[in-house]
Image (cartoon, rainbow, N blue to C red; front, side, top):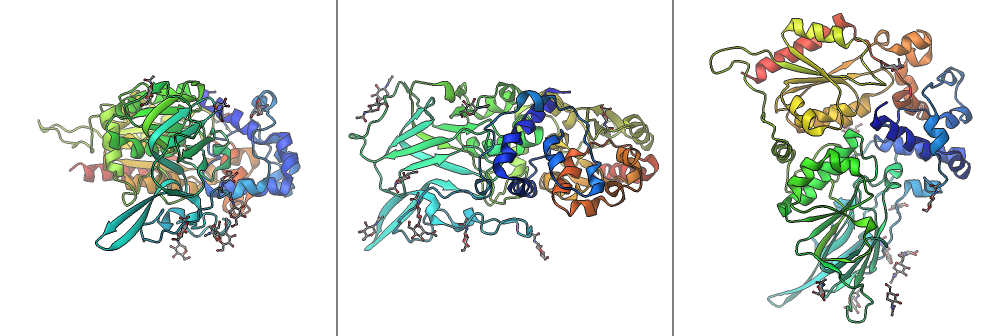
Length: 543
Ligand SMILES: *[C@@H]1O[C@H](CO)[C@@H](O)[C@H](O)[C@H]1NC(C)=O
Ligand SMILES: *[C@@H]1O[C@H](CO)[C@@H](O)[C@H](O)[C@H]1NC(C)=O
Ligand SMILES: *[C@@H]1O[C@H](CO)[C@@H](O)[C@H](O)[C@H]1NC(C)=O
Ligand SMILES: *[C@@H]1O[C@H](CO)[C@@H](O)[C@H](O)[C@H]1NC(C)=O
Ligand SMILES: *[C@@H]1O[C@H](CO)[C@@H](O)[C@H](O)[C@H]1NC(C)=O
Ligand SMILES: *[C@@H]1O[C@H](CO)[C@@H](O)[C@H](O)[C@H]1NC(C)=O
Ligand SMILES: *[C@@H]1O[C@H](CO)[C@@H](O)[C@H](O)[C@H]1NC(C)=O
Ligand SMILES: *[C@@H]1O[C@H](CO)[C@@H](O)[C@H](O)[C@H]1NC(C)=O
Ligand SMILES: *[C@@H]1O[C@H](CO)[C@@H](O)[C@H](O)[C@H]1NC(C)=O
Ligand SMILES: *[C@@H]1O[C@H](CO)[C@@H](O)[C@H](O)[C@H]1NC(C)=O
C-alpha cells in the first residue's frame, strides 16, 4: 500500500466510527453520507470498507453479498470518538453566524448575492436554499463618499461566505496568534455586522468530512484599539499574509489541486511573491510535495502558525482561499470570478516545474523527421488497476504510439515532466488523472470508466475540467466482461447486470462506485478504436 492509501483508510475509519453512528442514528447517518456523496467527490479517496455500516444497513439481499474484503486494520487502530460533528443538521446546513443590521443599499454593497447562490441546479437530493442569499452572512467595511451633493455609502466585505469557501480580507493592524487561533484587527473604519467571525480557512465548504479536518479560527475586529486588549506584536512583518489550511483531503492528488493548489494560486498570485504564507493544520508531506509551487508563489519561508505563541503582526491578512462560485465545478478557475484563468494557472505550473511544452509538439521535426506521439498509461496499484496494461501498451505501439507506463506518486516535479512530454494520457477514473494539468495544450485525455455508476463523477472531475484546459477528451466505458466484478459475482448479480439501476438507489450507489474493488481488464479489440481515435486527434492537433 502506498502512503496515500494508508492515509485515506485511516480517515475513513475515523469518520464513521461506531460512536458516531450511535450518535447520529442510522437514518441521519445515511442521509448525511448520501448528502455528502451527491455533493462532492468526497469518497473518492475512500477505497476501504465501511464494515460497521455494511452490517447495519438494511440492504437488499443481492447487495448484502457485496462484502468488501480489504483489511480493516486502520479501523481497529485508528478509531476516534470525536471525528465527526455530532448532529445531522450541522452536516447539512452551514450556520449563519452573523446578523448584520445594515443600512447600506448601494448595488455593489456587500457581496453580490451570486456569491451565495448554488449555481449548479438539478440535483434534487440537495436541500434547497442551502446557501441562501443573505447579507447577514457578511462583515462589511463601510465607505462613505460624497459625490457632488450625494452622500453615498458603499460596503466592502471583510468576511464573506461563498459557495465553497469563506474568506476574510482584513486591512489594518492585524495580529495573528497561532496557539489560540485568534486574529485581532485594530480598525479605524466603520463596519457593520458582528465583530467576531469564525472561519475555517479551507476551500471545500459544505464537505463535512473535509472541513472536520480544518482548524477553526476566530477573527475579531476591534474598533477602539486603545481600549481593546490587543496582544503585543512580537514579530512585525512588512508583507501581507495569507492564512490557509492543509487539512481536508490533502495528499489525494485530485483534492490537492482542486481544494488547495488552484485556490492558493488564485488568492496568492497577485502578490507576486511578496506574501507570507501562514499554514494551519501542519502537513509536512504536502509541503514537500508542492514545494515547487510554494516557492513560486511566496518569497518567504512559510510559517506553521498553529505552533506560534508569539503574536505575528501584519498590515493585511487574508484568511482562507478564494474559489469559484459554482458548487460542483472542480479543477477549474472561473475567469468571470478571478483575475486569472486556467491557462494562466497552467502556465504558472509550467514555470514552476520548468516544463517545456505549452502545446503538443509537431510530429514532424525541423529536419523533416517524424516522431511517434507519446502515450502515458497511468497505472494504479491497488484498486481500479489494469490487469493487462502490457496488452494495452502493445496495442498502442502497434497503432504508432511510443508508450510510457507509470504510476503517479508524490514526486510531483518528476511526474509533471513525464506528463508534459506526452501527447496522450490514459487512465482509469481516479486521482492520477489530475495530472492532466501538466499536459500540453491539445493533448488527449482518455478516461476509462469502470462499471458501477462513475459517469457523473467522471464528468465533473475530469471531463469538464479537461475542456477548460484545452485538452481533447475521450472516454471508454468498460463492459461487464472487462471488470473483475464479473468473475467475482457472476453475470446474474445485480451489480454486474445493471450497475446504473444500483446507482439510482443512493446508498448502494455510494458503495458500488467507490467501495467495491474492481480491476479493469480492457478488451483490446473493443478498445482499439479509442486508441486509433486518440492517434488521429494527435495527428490533427500537431499539424
Ligand atoms: C477528541 O478531541 C479532543 C479535543 O478536540 C482531543 O484532545 C482528543 O484527543 C480527541 N480524541 C480522540 C480520540 O481523537
Ligand atoms: C440572528 O438573527 C436571528 C433572527 O433574526 C436570531 O434568531 C439569531 O439568534 C441571530 N444570530 C446571531 C448570531 O445573532
Ligand atoms: C442606520 O441608519 C440610522 C439612521 O440613519 C442610524 O440611526 C442607525 O444607527 C444606522 N444603523 C447602522 C447599523 O448603521
Ligand atoms: C437542468 O435540467 C434542465 C432540463 O431538465 C436542463 O435544460 C438544464 O441544462 C439542467 N441544468 C443543469 C445545470 O444541469
Ligand atoms: C432559505 O430561504 C428559504 C425561504 O426563502 C427558507 O425556507 C429556508 O429555510 C432558508 N434556508 C436557510 C438555510 O436559511
Ligand atoms: C438579517 O438579520 C436581521 C436581524 O438580525 C433580520 O431581520 C433579517 O431578516 C435577516 N435577513 C435575512 C435575509 O435573513
Ligand atoms: C456576536 O457573535 C457572538 C457569537 O459568535 C455572540 O455571542 C454575540 O452576542 C454577537 N454580538 C452581537 C452584537 O450580535
Ligand atoms: C488581556 O489579555 C490577557 C491575555 O491575552 C489577559 O491575561 C488579561 O487579563 C486581559 N486584560 C484585560 C483587561 O482584559
Ligand atoms: C512592532 O510594531 C509595533 C507598532 O508598529 C511596535 O509597537 C512594536 O514594538 C514592534 N515590535 C517589534 C518586535 O519590533
Ligand atoms: C486489483 O489489482 C491489484 C494489483 O494487482 C491487487 O492488489 C488487487 O487485489 C486487485 N483487486 C481486485 C478486486 O481484483
